[in-house]
Image 1 (cartoon, rainbow, N blue to C red):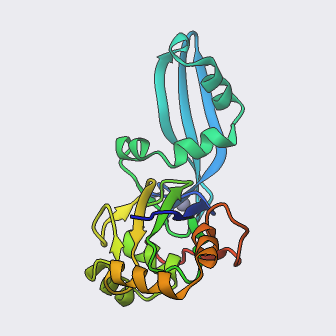
Image 2: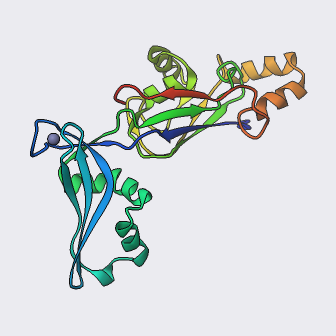
Image 3: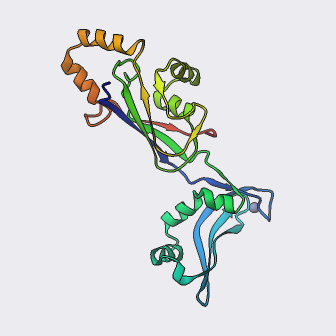
Length: 233
Ligand SMILES: [Zn+2]
């Protein structure tokens, strides 16, 4: 099988998730990272918290990261990142599912990502299979059906039909939520072999080679599309 054609889709971060838990001071539940991490030293023991701000009343609340850990057990670079409010560390803590689970709160990933695609517009008509590598810049859970609809510019009904016809091969169910890199394959219309045969006879081989390279290393033949995530994935 010719799998020369490749496209890359990227789930890009546009915001950090919202921490959902009750605010002690108001009826609000949505919290944003304040950008700060607090470190308290008591002798050789450290307490570390991620600081959140209530989106409604601005009250600061704390999420424990480490409680009374000996200073020697923390990697020095990590301690420095805590002490300097390193934005990468704030991000890592804010998107951490294990931290959320440990502290009993939920992460709302709505509006945190957008899909960047470089799929050739003729992707669905070309009989050569197209491999799409989907990369996640942040681990936002994205429903696969929605991802495909955005990436291919089709309705969800059309996506379901293509998957039902075996045109789109997925490593997971269409209604599953993905949050890490995966690959899918899109096959041409009709019986793949028959279509390939007729196209080969009809089109000069040079043109086919150019088409085959588009979307990977060849010069861009179209503009990347941005699809914003507006509703819950
Ligand atoms: Zn509040």
